[in-house]
Length: 144
Image (cartoon, rainbow, N blue to C red; front, side):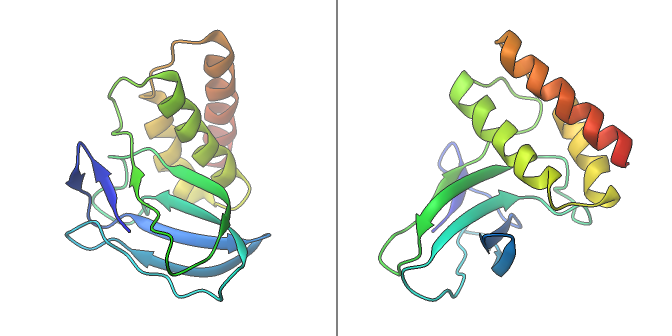
């Protein structure tokens, strides 16, 4: 399992696994972008890829969330993350916004500061996505 951009591994991406609202496990990607999280088999989980506000890469990447994953050792889950400040197609923008929506339910003021900064650099092409981005931006600004 890896976190990558342009097939280049990304180190120090926080990978968190949730079942319902409970954190089941977490790990950070290594220099090869690989990570391992030990989970019980056949659990329905959500996997979140994001930076951590205390790390040097805190503002470099937009988050990504994969919902409704069945935990199984035989199912690799690689993610291509969108670099902050880079253009995005609508699919990548929706993926990043979903990551921020997920984070809005869990995170605190420390996270909100970096989220607000990253969101301000997310380029949208759709009016609907711009409105969602603006609402999230206001949320994280208020939290920070």
